[in-house]
Image (cartoon, rainbow, N blue to C red; front, side):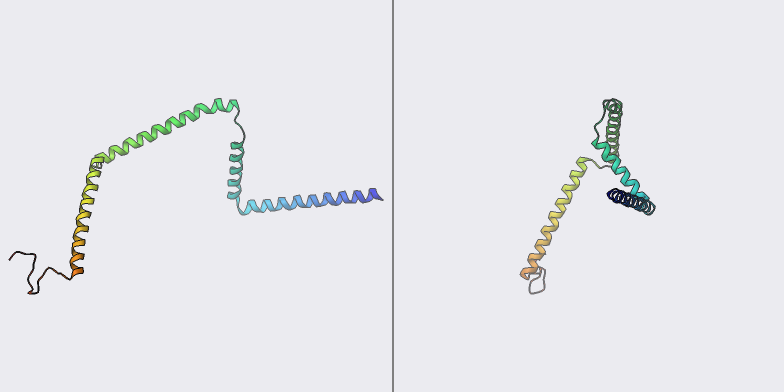
Length: 143
């Protein structure tokens, strides 16, 4: 009787495992149908992570080192060319370091004059002096 019960338990366990596997397959298929791009992105992320964690073989190092060096050299050359081209274009349009410094100096000088004039007007306004005496004549202009 124990053999029959154990066989029934094993068949029940096997049946549950099949049902669980079928349910997982069905849910996976539904996920792929509803969000295929997410599955692709997730797969790529897992691949990148696995690639980053696995050590490189000597053969990979031998094959990829020259490619990496060429890519780095090409990128540096492109950056240098873009920098020089940009600098040349700015100079052609009159945007030089000296011109920028002069513009900043002029801006700060104008700002200082505006603040000074605004402060003088505010001070006169606060003291009640409007630039005219009680006779209605302008005190700032010569007589």
